[in-house]
Length: 79
Image: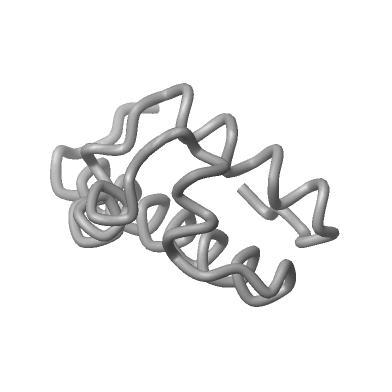
């Protein structure tokens, strides 16, 4: 089964939105500020702000840490 470019772009966009939603849910569940959450990711608060605005820029290690933190704080991961 082949996938069209438009469908792939939509899927990627949906995955990025889900990742940012996961970040926000984890920050809320852990009662962390954006700066505190960024420190757990090993980046600055400004970098996290930019990554949330452009989720395509999130690095693999950051993505793994986001998923790990979500798991630690009991946020269900659907993707």
